[in-house]
Image (cartoon, rainbow, N blue to C red; front, side, top):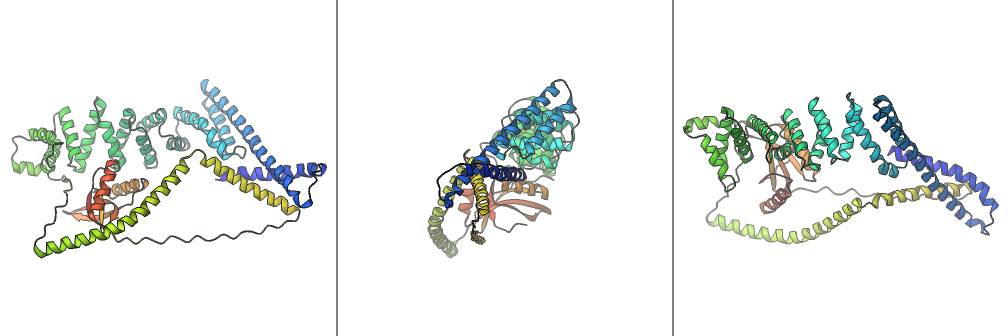
Length: 484
């Protein structure tokens, strides 16, 4: 923003100065045959021509100087002079940050400089905070640059790890390069070194342990150890426990995890084979010993059992449900129309924002407005007065009152920071996420929940859509409680 203001300020005052001098010399010498009231018209045309010419001239000079410094830096890199190359890159950066290059030209032409400078910083042996911040900033803008991402992750693994300030950058790289096994395994190693079990880490573990290969098996074994430490007992945990047991002779902790999973996971056609293999590891153990082995593990969250009613109460409940369904259906039609119009407007706004013509149009609008200001200044010099227009205040939108009774629980953690990180991630996806605290079996749980709904059917439909999109792993419908 500061760069754009600086560039426009120089262009405006340069236009006023140069355009004014040219106007004083040129306009009196030309006989347009116009009435005095129309003389500001050729003056305004002259001001516009000078304004755009200065912009073109500034961009050409700035890009020429920046290209010369970049070529100089590349030449110093080839001969091994790191200090001279760094100084040349700094000069090129100074040109891009000066008033010469316009914001639009800077966005278009700076990719070459940022790409080369990022690779230059990665090649240096002495890392500084400034260079690390620059590399992370480049990867946030270009998370699909596999070569830079791999080099950055390898250096982070060889050094002190990622650090919290680079978590979002690493998550963006992981999502952009989801099919790159090397990137996913490097990320998984870094996450494992920090014992992370938040959502981005779990997604990375899934990608890194899939398929065949020694590296994937090693990561699967380390993730299994992390799950054992957290007392996890679900289908994915069982898959990792069995994978680790097949690679090596299972120890007591691994057998404990298998025992907990086999006991608590309900059998389905999908997990029947895993449960059979897990039971084979536990053959010959008595029930008391198996019960002791399950101590310290957390069973999967069961689905809510259906509430049974009988007699008049059941009939009253059915009538109430029918009346409620009619009310919901009527309001649903109205709300459906509103939501459809809202979705269409959001898609239109999103399409306009993604259009490559949006920014140039906005730039031209801004330039036109600034030009109008310059013209007003010129007109003021000959005695015209411009009255400012009043702006109407926009009323603040009314706050929405939440009266819905149900919500979706998508995760539960024993550590508060894990819940907070997952909530922050869900909010970046546009979801209305929050967390609450509850105590069960002498343990404090931090439950992550999403949105609120008028009935369970609406909640289940929304949760199923999130699950099909891959935004959440699983869910169940719970009673709505305010966020903690």
